[in-house]
Length: 289
Image 1 (cartoon, helix red, strand yellow):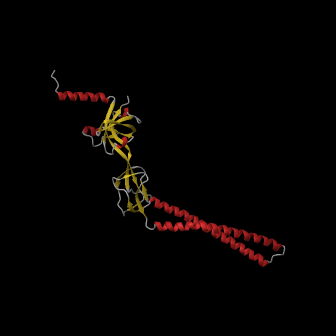
Image 2: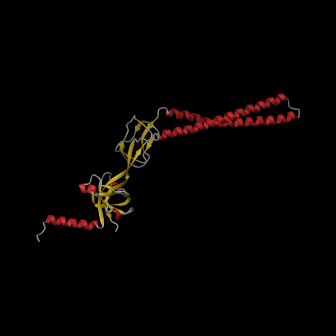
Image 3: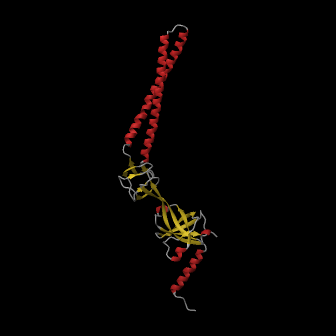
C-alpha cells in the first residue's frame, strides 16, 4: 500500500479527532448578543434635551433625554396655587362649623323661650334667619374645600406628566441608537434612544436537528473566543427554541443552508466584560447520552 502524504495523513487525523469528539461534545459557532431597551416617553412632547449620544455609557437612573410640553409649567403652578388654598379653607370650614352650631343652639333655646312666652316672634325670626345663613355658608365652604382637594389631585396628575417626559436609564449600559433629534415632537410610546445592557451578554447559536435531542436547558457549556485562546468561559443553556428553522444565510454551503436547526440561547456571567456584543464565539456543548 502506498504511503500517505503528510498533508493527507494530517487531514485523516483531524477527521478522526472530529468524529471522536462529536460523539461526546458538540462545538457550534455563536454570536454575543446584549439585551436592548428602547426608552420612550409616556406622554407626547418636544425633545428639548438629549444628554446622551450613541456610544455613551449610562448608569441606572441617569437622565438620558428630557421632553417638554408648552404651557405645562404654567399649568402646574396654577393647580399648585389652587391646591394651596385648601389649607386656608380648612380654617374657614372650622369657623363656619362653629358659627352654624352656635346659631342652631341659639335657635333651639329661642324656640323654648317662645313657647314660654319669653322670646318675641321677631327674635325667633331673626335667629331662624341667622341659623339658615350659617348653614348655607357652611355648605359653600365645604364645597370650596372639595374643589381645592380636586385641584390638589389635578396638580399631582400634571406633575406626573412632567415626570413622564424625563427618560431615565433603567440599568447600566451603552446608548446604541438615537432615533430622534432635538426639537422633534415625539408621540407617547415612540422610542427616543435604545440602551444596550452590556453587563448581561448572552450567546445566540444554532444546533443541528440531529443533536437537539441531546441538549437540555440548564446544561453547562464552555465558551471560547479568538481573543482569549487559552481561556474557557462558563455558560449555561437557558433556552432551546421549540421550533426548527433553516440555517441562517451566514452558513458556508448550500447543503448547510438547507439543514434544519434549532436556535439556542446561552446565558453567561459577562466574563468580566470581556464578551462584547457581536463577538463570534465557539460554544462547546457536552452532549447528553
